[in-house]
Image (cartoon, rainbow, N blue to C red):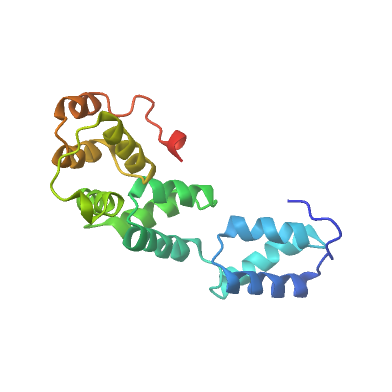
Length: 185
């Protein structure tokens, strides 16, 4: 992120810039490092500012990850896999992200989260009318994969609202040949 004509900041001003950036939005250490590198007059100041912020508790990837995972679970109804991918994309250490996501989803019934997600997606007008269209089921399947849910649980939830169990059983037999949901992000 090369910024043109940006005033380069000394250590004290860089620290103030970092505090202001963190006041506006929670940032991971990686995200903040990227911003600071674009502003720092001296590259050595970046690590010193990050160290000071961590020391005083303003920069904590573990705390940010825990909060982020709980928020994404509670308010957006996303699955563990999606939240873990997003934290990785934000530069959180994989072990820290895994611990935060596991903690946030401990005791959570992902099948129930899928049902809630489907209810929001289908709306109250859906009622108890089974979905017959394989295209509609495939679309819902992909939507739920993007939301970070495991394919086996998606199939179970879709079987509950579908009249086309043959098609869903085929998905259950070959849930995700690539083993990678990144194509759905």
